[in-house]
Length: 255
Image (cartoon, rainbow, N blue to C red; front, side, top):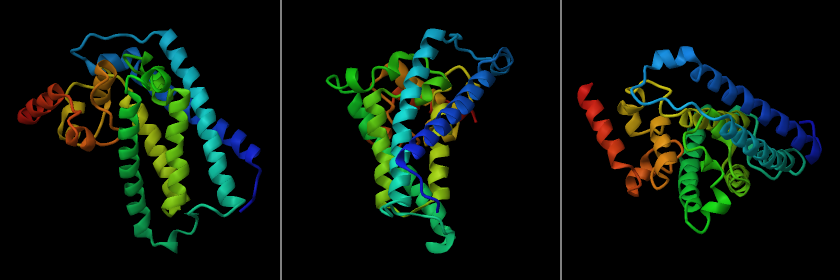
């Protein structure tokens, strides 16, 4: 593998991450917040158009977050290519093809737990102002909010990706799949409570997986719904909003 300097990796990943953010978040925003999309949704909830002030704030935080994650990615690549210190590998047969899927699911499960407990910690009154308040300036989130981490929060969240490549053997395809899942899921979670038909987030999938309705409640109430991918930890530790669960039950009866 061609070796590059830490600075090269940092600049390259900063450009890639920013491009990915504007492509995925921007494209999703243009699609779901267009007049055509609003007509299709036919939401029963009052529509609240996002303010440009809020969007600009989210973009500023996201640019900084891109810098933090670029440094983390540069460290990972330097550790892999220059020092041989990670457990990343590029031969799919090294652990078998079955391991690609197993390791992908394992990382998502571990990341979900890491996110839940750090996210819940960020909401502690002594820490919220320093670690998470900026993200919550968007009371009604949009796709632009998906990557709008506060500076210290971005650093703490990047630690997961840095740490996991030293602990679990991961093929580069698996790592890229995790990053893509994280990006797309974050955008969907911050889509906003009005942007999909009322029945969509509350079907049987809504009981197990976090979607825009589930996470929008977190932005409104702050003290519930801390998960990233799955509702497991919220359910187990009683941070699941009861009204949301009742809504799920009603929709399941209708279906």
